[in-house]
Length: 471
Image 1 (tube, helix red, strand yellow):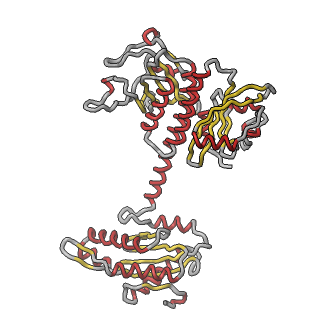
Image 2 (spheres, helix red, strand yellow):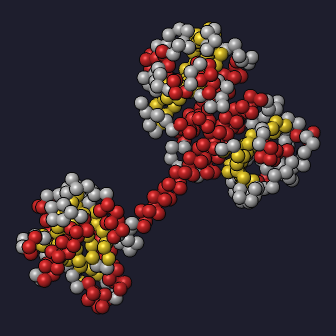
Image 3 (spheres, helix red, strand yellow):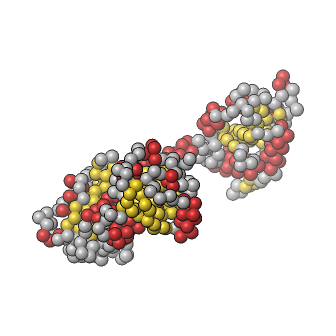
């Protein structure tokens, strides 16, 4: 059974008051939040892996196959189900089911709640739909790395839509303990606009003061529906639009406050349901933001490592790559090692200078790359020396590849500002593991064959044979 990353769901959904399940197309539960665990009377380990249609809590059977077909067709379902609580009492529950897409598959997100527990069903319905849609976007919009600001803008827009806010901002605490906005909606605040454009300037390095900073300093959400009357009101900057209501929710990670959602000017003011929705969204936002940064760090590390394995001039792999490749090579995988050396290269440098010599090496590298398969590797060992690793070849394939390189290079014309010339290459071949029990050993043997090619007149291919018997 495929499992989604647990951290994505646990941090965002475990604190929700409704039961939440993540279910695959076959009806198997992949995730159940704390409310579901409490309601069912099981622990999470017992719930995960069960079929939701077979739970003892179902007072009436659930036919999952047609339900899934309907969900795929319309994307969202709302139904009423007879449930049986851990105390044995039956109750009527509502299931709101959203189809969510993830990089590993398609799932049903079920939000279940007792109809007896909600005084304002229609309002709660709308909120749950918005929360479910927001969670769906968590999966769809953060699979690929985006910028921090793009993620902030996405979540801020969802927060404003959820609460009916006119504007808001979301940001984090910087290293100096001040506030840096990641996203700021345009409130009609002229002072926030970059001159000459319609782009909104982000708030950076702001000191926490007044009631708007309380979510960060106290770690608690705050509702201020009469801002002018609040004892910590400090007024507004010139050009700031009127503030009629304020909602601030801290963003937390591992129990520490790292930033804040701030929303403003909901008609009629904010309530506790707004707080619950934005607290849930805040958890999802932090998860998405940190996940994006982790992916970027991993990508940077991968690129740095890849750069360390590349020759900066030719963009070919370098000797360090050869050594790493050797460590991971299986004895069951046959590899041809071609040692290549550009003939009379020193004379080229002496005649035309090192700049032309570098040009020759780059063009030689390009010719070699054209002559090999995508599964093969061309490596610059140093100077004018190259090695080519041909994976799982026959002797004939290795020989033909080497001959193709030799012929293409011999027919290539190099141009300088005032002259043109040609070059040739000598190539030696050895086979792993037939000729040696290590790739380095094969390279040494291929070098011996290469020197025999040099001694034989250059511009030729020589296959290494033991006891100096050369083919």
